[in-house]
Amino acid sequence: MTKLSRRNFIKGYTLIPFISPAIAMARLSDYSSLNVDSKEAWVRKARREIPASQDSFFQTAGIGPSPKSVMNMVNKKLHFQNKGPVHPKISKVMSAIEGGLRNKLGKTFGAEANEVALTHSTSEGINIASWAINWNKGDEVMITNQEHPANTIPWYSISTRFGIKIKRLNFDVNTDIVNEIEKNITKKTRMVSIPHVSRNNGRALTVNESKLIAGILKKRNIRYHLDGAQGPLCIPFNFHELECDYYSTCGHKWILGPKGTGAFFCRKDILDQTRLTWTGSHSHSSMDQLGNYTLLPEARRFEFGTRALATFAGFDEAINWNNSIGINKILKRIDQLVVFAIEDWTNRGFKVSSPTSIGQRSGVFVIQLPKNCNGWKIYEALQLNDFTFTSPVDAPNDLRVAIHFFNTRNEIKNTFDLISNYCVRESF
Ligand SMILES: Cc1ncc(COP(=O)(O)O)c(C=O)c1O
Image 1 (cartoon, rainbow, N blue to C red):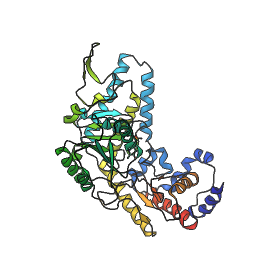
Image 2: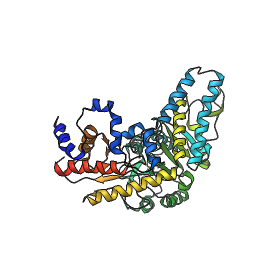
Image 3: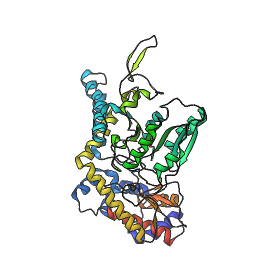
Image 4: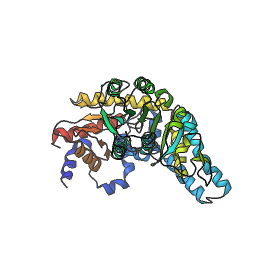
């Protein structure tokens, strides 16, 4: 209950009345007026369509809030399918969903449809990439010092099983990642797996850096995978332009799709050199009972088993929803809000931990708290007391305030008021 006194302390500054979380959940809509400052009608409209944006939602880098149309689509397709799961008319409609989605992902993000496999998370894609080659003892993989566990644990596991060596490169703000990679390559290096945008310090890899890395690695036959959990709809993403071999992402963060959706991109010319580990029905184009089989000649070979088609229809709808607004318009607004956040936070005398320069900065915005303040505690206080959702990251003094286009300047300012009041007025 110590938090109550803090909340009462804070409420003088925020004018948010004290109510219990249970009551507040029932009154979520009452909060909407507090946060909407946008003069832009398209942003106000989008916010009306995203129920969770009624809170101060800065957790898109963790899990994104979906618009109602996405949820409605999942619901509609689930009920439709259940009317007659094996009825030819119904199964025809349902089985067209995945092909349509692969096409749309390819068109939207610079790949051919046959280079896209539908997955359930970024982690699934990372696993496909990590098993793409036959590892030998002493082989080396490069990751960075700014990873999510999803791009760490698979390598630990492969290291435990096969004795590979993991090299952790420096991906701090402003470090030269191209040089880091180049100087760490040995004859044993087999793969590089790094973030497109770090979930930890918000640093984005630029297209130019990615092309240079690809050039260095291709010459030496080293595979190049990008962890793109924080990529699409957070920063510009075009698979071919990045020139990587593999790219793993998800639908449930910046794309605002249903939870448990993802995509793995595999360059067409490397497909047949990509070993398959987990597989099953639907991955093959032919098989017999004598041990003969051929895999599908496209990335779809990484998919198998019975799948959540209605959820993929929701993923498709999320892309439609973003496209109907305009992806460039969304990305431009994210960047404008990030610039506003940088100015507002630094004007208070504090530091920003994520990059501030064009190209490196992204919607994964990370602030540095004063020394007396701990990210975990602030994160907990904000969500419990203030319906403000941020996220702690690895550095104890950092707090991630992920900024999507539906956020507003008022929300950012109010949240920084809350944080600075917690940090400056009290020790946290
Ligand atoms: C950089 C990064 N990679 C991977 C993941 C894991 O994503 P998923 O839950 O889609 O597997 C996350 C999740 O936050 C992430 O930020």
